Image 1: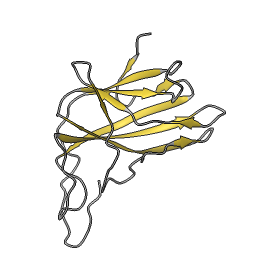
Image 2 (image 1 turned 180 degrees about the vertical axis):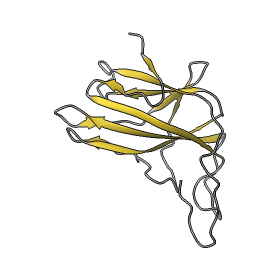
Image 3 (image 1 turned 45 degrees about the horizontal axis):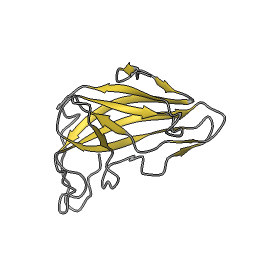
Length: 151
């Protein structure tokens, strides 16, 4: 079955789970400026909402982005200094929603975010959300001595 491609900002329904990718941001480091978290390539931060419209719990696994060559890149599983990071354990109760950020360590490029209903691999449903490359930063960061910046 071919995956449907959605645009950022468009509701993407995969089974009972509804995703909305709100924005992306690229960073060269995360966390404390004294001991920053440095990527191998660059951090791609994706802000999204996830809603469980079903009547059972939904488990949302770590997600992947797919590059133009078709290679998948899994989310970073250890993140520091990202406000509203979704974390690793993502269980949504029926009718619950969560908004947060997920992080990838990839080369700056266009990607597709593969979203899932969290089902078993045999019957899992997925879709893609287009993440066009945009290196614009949402604002100027100012480091305040003694503080830990968050995104």
